[in-house]
Length: 205
Image (cartoon, rainbow, N blue to C red; front, top):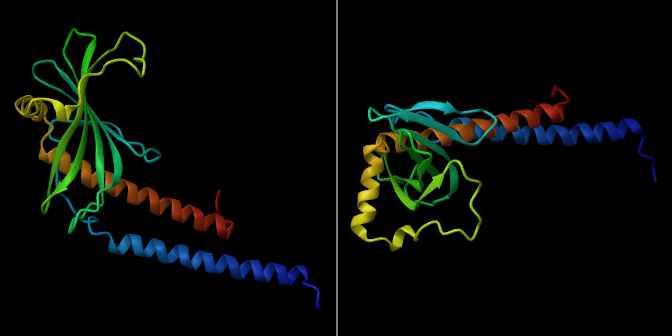
């Protein structure tokens, strides 16, 4: 059997790398050219300001201060795929909303989900609502955090959702979060592919 020389080994390795690079380049081109929400401009921040939006992290944090002195903080990141028929955005947004009254050491926290609604619209659902005391340690897993939101009286559910809407958690904001986080994930994925391509080519610094 002929011996595989170092030159042949290098040639075989180069061909393998070339095949991988072509696949990576094809995937990058596909992601940049076929994403349906790439040019979507729906939604806006309203009175919220961006407090955190690192290219290295998956989340975004927004804040606003109401005329009453209340502070509202929103943190959001993408959740699971929704598989909505005919939808543009494949994943829901997991959103936490915290409302702090001036002079108090407790905050109201709402755990919510944001999903697409119709064409160009969105909606949010509250999964849970509870309060946190900022001066205490993290509550034990067995601590009572309130009932399941779905078990609350429907009028109370509607009132709590209306409370959040009055604090600025409206459709403009949820539209913004859906679009921004999907675009952000796309950018991070493409950047990861490009770094992987550079690494295979030996150009990664």
